[in-house]
Structures are given as structure tokens and as C-alpha cells.
Length: 251
Image 1 (tube, rainbow, N blue to C red):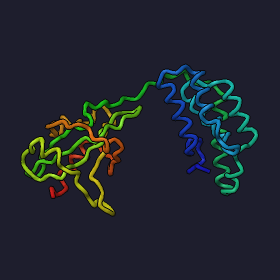
Image 2 (image 1 turned 30 degrees about the vertical axis):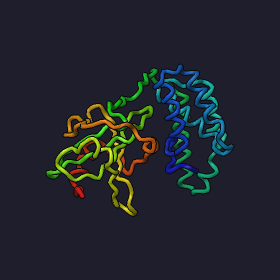
Image 3 (image 1 turned 135 degrees about the horizontal axis):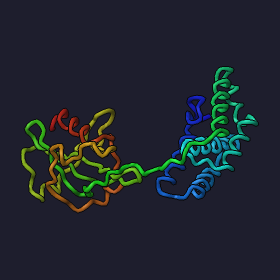
Image 4 (image 1 turned 135 degrees about the vertical axis):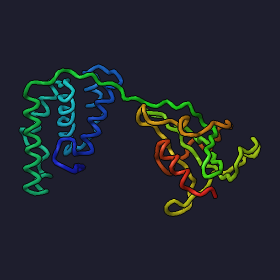
């Protein structure tokens, strides 16, 4: 049971189904098609998980004022038949009672008046202007820190550069020739030595960008093939990266 509580969405699979359906709407897919795509995407669920699809899909559709009658019927049939309660019974009487209460509440919601149809907009996403091969500088503790963009991790919620801190200790940007020869700094933050790399994202429009926090674009190098699959050691935002650069020793 991939659940951490009795609520409909206190379940990994239920959350995935909800998100998959919402993403269809965010992409302006028509209601009926979004419903069918979601059902098709989770056709692989095992027999003891199929009920989660109908409960989660009905719940999110009702929240958005888009409850499909066929999905409603399937969800109510699941609730009335007690499908899926076996595992809750094994967890104890208290857990079973709480799950039954959550299902009863959902049934009442599905059977009652539905809210007005809500507009679902795609979340704001940051489309960074940085490119693989760009080199940024940042002044910290009287020393110049240099970072190279290894690649840009681009998905539906945003484009975030993965930066590598270069092994450089100086007060000026080196020549192009020397810059190209700089290696990625290795760091032992926790455990064995590993490349000092960071995925830097903006999650909200009001979050500061690199241009407002003291970073300067100082060069652009040809992207390196080996960087195309680079992984990040940490996930942060630009403010967090500044904090890290100011705290760490330069060598």
C-alpha cells in the first residue's frame, strides 16, 4: 500500500494520477480527452490498485468542477463495494475507520452539487537565457569564483542550468585558453569526493535571477559532449547558490 494516510491523496499513486490529469488540462487538452488519456496512462495498474485510479480521478475532477459521469459512477461503485479496504483492515480498526470516513466524505462530495468549472492554467516557468558552455563569475571573499553551465535541464515546469564550480583561485578572469583548461572542482561535501555541481532553478517569478545577485556572464565555450549527461550534486536557487559560494573556501 503506497499510502501514508487515509485521505484520498495521501497515496503516491493517487497523487500521480491527480498530477497527470491536471497536466493535461494545463496543456489545454479538452476535458473528455484528458480523462481518457489519464485512464489509458494507468491501465497498467494491478488489480489491487485499479480502484485508486477511479477514486483519485473522480476526486480531482470534482475539485475542478469537471466531474465526468462515468468516472463518478466507477468511483461510487468502488466505495460502495468496499474494494481496497482489505489492506486498511490489516492496518487495524482505527486505520480502517479513518479510511471509511474519507471514502464516505468523497461519496457525499461526488453525489452532491458540483462546484463551478475551474480554469486550470499552466504554472509559471522560468526559461533561462543561459546556455551550455556559458561561464559565470561571482566575487566572493576577495576572490573570483567561476562556474560553467554544463547543460540546461529543461522540462515542462522550467529550464534550470546545471553549473559546475571551476577549480580556479584568482582575482581576474583568466585568458580564454586557460579558461578552457580549467577542471571542475572536486568537493567532499558529504562522503567521497565528487564534482561540485548544482542545479539552480527559479520556482516563482519573484525569485531573484543570476543577473540581480552579482553573477556576470564572462565567456562562452563550446559545449562539451561529456557534459550532456552531467548530474547535479545539489538542487538550489540562485540565492542559495550565493550563500554556498560565500561560505565555501576558495581552495
